[in-house]
Length: 279
Image (tube, rainbow, N blue to C red):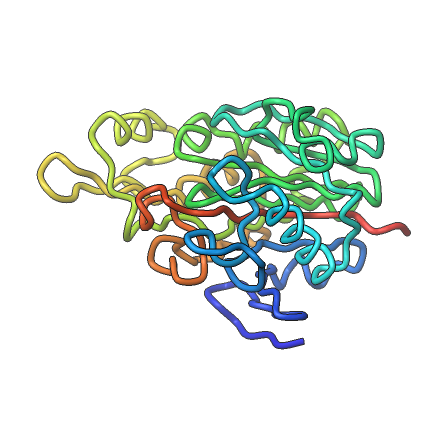
């Protein structure tokens, strides 16, 4: 298997399928995780080649084949996948074995959630991206995991903190025990927004928004979703040394990562996946 460092993440390629992992998570023996790229699928242009998003013009057969290829590369069972249906809000759902297949083998059964958590081994969480920020959560002591889809609305609504609170409620997690990975998304270099979006972040006064909102061109602002999420996670009790910021901009790297902005919406999609292994 080929591998190399990209940003603060590790790029791996197995059977021609490229994906990213966090070194801090790789060191934990009872979890598998990955963030997909555009590398290694079967989809034709403009979805070439690893597209994991339905409903954008690619065939479901291609998406299903791509999911099988990614699962085989990462080492998880396709039948164990549980997918979210993301609406840019902050609903978090606890799932288990009985939900396996929802949103994947049974697409119509997806429920409107932007985050998934579980403490059941063999259940693979799956969330979807193409500029929004993936948040990976791993409680090493309680053996619980989570994925959250942090678009700009979700980030401003503090979905990262809400996911931590959900893990505290459901699994009695201690935030000091949780590792978090902030994955590839549109970076501060490329996320130019209008005043209304900037104001949603400037309202986060507790987190010193001047650190993640900067004035840009006249009437425009640059927002750093990575730093905003990092500060929100710190406020939720996550330790600074337990947060990894991947540092990979999907827009800058649109040749191998999907970016809604770079492609003007003509695109496929990526996915984050995570599974607890049996003891």
